Length: 318
Image (tube, rainbow, N blue to C red):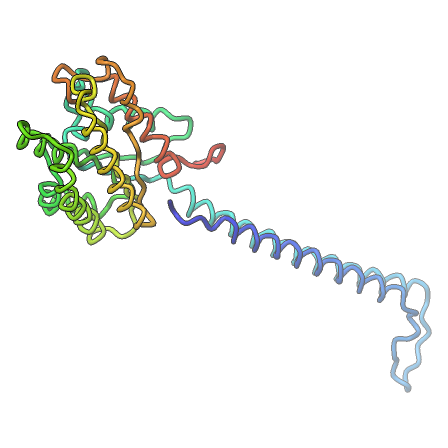
């Protein structure tokens, strides 16, 4: 997600090396020409003729070669210094070992249903990152998930000073939202649950989700934002209502389209993770994920955010 300038640095490095090699070559050639030129060709004052001995020619040749080597060494040192500075600049830009992550949203972010009380997928994700082979030197993650939050409520909560400040300082922002929007429609139309009811509400959901992103960008233009997709928690007990799967698919497409409009955002699909999941993936309320379900969510999210939170493999962060 972050802009990669590696190609530019590589190209500049290539030019510097070519320039250095060319300069050293020319210097050596010039030295050779000067040393091979007859010493008698050096002009002398007419009124002070001087006879040159072989020893004079030897010392003159040695002086020219010494000057040539000295200048060549200066050029090589200059190139090496430039390369070292460029490498250091590249490391400082692309191996930023300070990562501030903020998670906002609903009960999935809060970790409701996780019997281990480890904040669901956020807690698991934190352990995955911290225990990696090359973890960030300074890594923080703040969890502002709240059970029951819908898109409109999340927009309001982002105005709270603590959450607002965290978003402003964030490098990576994770969002889970939308499940309670669907649940609200589900409960309000339980006796007349049709596809059209959800389809009519999709435009309002799209507008509210866009407002979520607009609110974030008003506070932070540069953070990488990841919207975690929706999944159908009712497929085990309401498989006779195929419209639910279609609604989840439609609303995920809305989320995918909105993130696609933002160069620093991405959509993380989850529906495929739970399509064939058995009841062990769900908590006792048959709605929220269990600890096992949260592990699968954390693994999927980590796949997407890994380039943002971990240095390139094999790089030294010290």
